[in-house]
Amino acid sequence: MAVSSLGGGLAIRQAEPVAGRRLTDLAHRWSDPLAVGLTALLAAIAAFLLWTLLTDPMYRSSLGNDREIYAAAVARWNEGQPFYLPEQLAGAYEIQTGHVLYPPIAIPAFELIMAIPPVLYWAIPLAGIVAVITIHRPARWAWPLIAACCAYPWTPMLLIAGNPSLWITAAVAAGTVFGWPAILVVIKPSLFPFAVFGIRHRSWWLAAAGAICVAAAFGAMWIDWVHVVLNASGWRAGPLYSFGDAPMLAIPLVAWLARRRPSTHRRLHRSLQTA
Image (cartoon, rainbow, N blue to C red; front, side):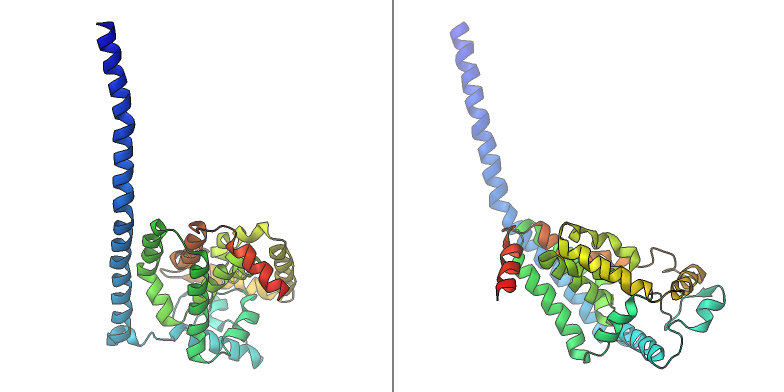
C-alpha cells in the first residue's frame, strides 16, 4: 500500500508541471493573436471616430478650432491686449468657445507652436510620437492599451481640434527619451503627474528651474489665471478641467513602460550627445 501510494503521489506531482507547461504554452500561443486582433479592432474604432469627425458637418467645423483660439489669444497678447478675455475676470462665467484656461507660462510655448504652418502643426508632434513608440518597440501586450488610448473618444476630438495637448503628448514622448521635455506638461497644471516621471533625469531639474524662472516673469498675471479658473463654470470647469486629456498623454508612457529594450533611450541619448 505504501509503495502504491508513493507511486501515485509521484505521478500526480509529475503531472502538475506538465499541465502547467501546457497552460503556459496555450497562453503564449494565443496571447499574440489576441493582442493583435484587439489592437486592430480598437484601431478601427479610432479610425472610424476620426472619419466621422472629418466628414460629419456637425463636427467638421471643429477642425483646427482650438488652434485658432490660442493663436488669437497670442495675437491679442502681442498687441498689448489681455491674454484672458474681460468676461473671464469680471466674475462667474460659463466656458464658451474662445475662452483660454491655460496659465501664463503657456504663452511662450504658444508663441512658438502657433507660428508653425497648419500642416506642420499636426505633422511634427504626430511624427515625434510615432518615432518614440517605434524606438521603444513596446511588447505586444501593450498594443491594445495604446490603441485603446487612441480610440478613447476625447483623443480624436483633441487631435481634430488641434488642441495643444497634441504637443504636450509629444513632449511626454520626448521626455521618455531625454527626460527634460516632460516638464512642458506644466502648461496644463491638471496633468502635472505626467511631468514628474522625468524627475530621475538631471536635465529635468534644470528644465524645471528654467520653467520656474519663466513663470515668475509673469508676476501678478498668475492671480488673473486663478480667477479665470475659479470663475469658470460648465462641464469642463474646475482645477481638473484637463483630466480628460490623460488617455492621449498616456500613449507614449504605455510604450515606454512596455519597452522591450529598456536601455534604448539611453543609447539614443548618448549617440545624440556625441554626434
